[in-house]
Image 1 (cartoon, rainbow, N blue to C red):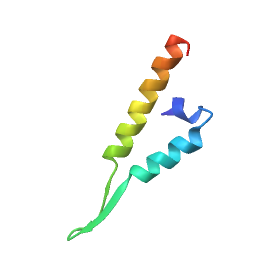
Image 2 (image 1 turned 30 degrees about the horizontal axis):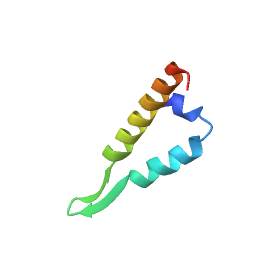
Image 3 (image 1 turned 90 degrees about the vertical axis):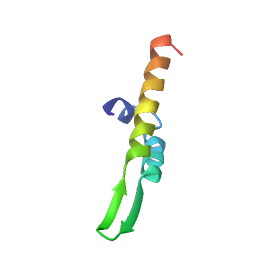
Image 4 (image 1 turned 180 degrees about the horizontal axis):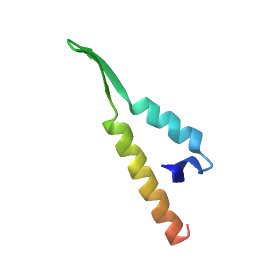
Length: 56
């Protein structure tokens, strides 16, 4: 994820990540689900690295 922090549009990536975090309240209290957000970061980093390797 350090790779993404160095990208020119790191702020936009962070906003999207934060928007994908879901919070809900159930009987046991508040639950936070990071699944979609973490998948987004991993997919974005992989795509950017592939692009960088190909020189695009």
